[in-house]
Amino acid sequence: MASRKLDRSLIRGFDLFRDMTEENLDAVLATVQVRTVEPGEPVFSQGASADEFFLLLHGHLKVVQITPAGEQVVVRHVLPGEVFGIAKAIRRTNYPATAEAVTESIVLVWMSSQWQDFVALNPVLAFNALEAVGERLQEAHTRIRELSTEEVERRVAHALLRLIQRAGRKEGDGSILIDFPLTRQDIAEMTGTTLHTVSRLLSAWEGQGVVRSARRRIAVTDENRLAALARG
Amino acid sequence: MASRKLDRSLIRGFDLFRDMTEENLDAVLATVQVRTVEPGEPVFSQGASADEFFLLLHGHLKVVQITPAGEQVVVRHVLPGEVFGIAKAIRRTNYPATAEAVTESIVLVWMSSQWQDFVALNPVLAFNALEAVGERLQEAHTRIRELSTEEVERRVAHALLRLIQRAGRKEGDGSILIDFPLTRQDIAEMTGTTLHTVSRLLSAWEGQGVVRSARRRIAVTDENRLAALARG
DNA sequence: CGGGTTGTTGATACCGCTCAAACACTGTGG
DNA sequence: CCACAGTGTTTGAGCGGTATCAACAACCCG
Image (cartoon, rainbow over all chains, first blue to last red):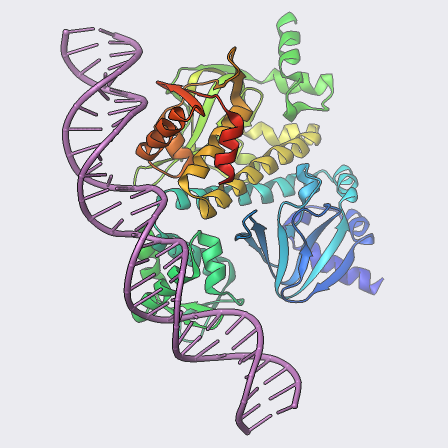
């Protein structure tokens, strides 16, 4: 009972479960499973049967698609409180991408087959999921627009701005640190370029005092300048 | 009554209204408005208040985003039976893009404010909308992957394949015609390139007997060859 | 017919990828 | 505690795919 209560309060604040009654929340929690994932380990893999869907409780994931040629493209990053792997809800039988832990993570797991029951029990779930997917669709269109019309430098600048927006942590010196390990390769896969070009850009920007970076750590020291670079 | 019955049968087959009862369908139709749109005319415009949402009954639309620099990017094409402009359902107050008629079109129009009521009345609507948006999200990710990793020729080939899939009409000679007017510029805006490059590609392909084209009309004469080009 | 739209084609420039090599940091095990 | 391997990062040189610039041709409609 105590643990049940704890769980309920844990997910109470998450968007997906907004406006659900206590009883229904309990019903949803009754079948949940908790799983921890080590860095580099997948939660689910591209092409696998979409038997489960997930909510990230703690940690950080990246969702990547792998092309036939073996290149990776980062689809998105998952932050705590977000649902992911809801392929079944959008009428897919297989996961279209791989979700992999960037840092040690804790995920809640449900059987996909329960999605229908949950929605029947509480239609607001579909409503909330629709909003979540809609937001992602917009972000996807933004990226398409950038990939179609902007040069690499501006795309990378935009990507960094979005990263500090979503996962930024203010540092003592006024800079904003991206709060999870991130390589040049990762940024390249987010922006459709190569790690070499990203490295050159970051080096140049570091010289101008716009960013500060170390191995797998990037902080923005002058957000305004970066925004100007993004504007072109 | 007769006209009401007619309307009901008209939209009965559309995905969004799948699994709705006759009465609820009537309730939804009670407040609908019909509007015709001339080629080149917008149904709604980027940035405008999202007061209405739509279903395309007849014709053909394209949805475009305009960048600050004035360049256009084609977000998607709308075919009969599809909903569009559902910004409010994904928690936006303004349209993120412009929807413009390519051919003379007939659209059904509802007030955005009714979306909530409709969903309350018939939760399956949210479910169906979720599926529709999910499909678009996947297509968006496909385009991101292509823009990130493929060269122009393959992207254009993929775009044509998708177009004949969605809007292809078999011709007598075995070729497949894209069933609406389409310029080089349009294809360029769909694939993140320039009309010049598209023109060169189509010329080359026409020489190889892969496509046949006239002013604003493009037909694929050898789908297999085109698929091979898309594969790279 | 004349003006606007659409399409073709050539010449040139350049952004950013590819290829290549070396360097830096981190964790591990002897 | 140091050697070493693995991963991540930097930087240079060269080239190629495409955008850009430019001019013209074809087509359509009023």
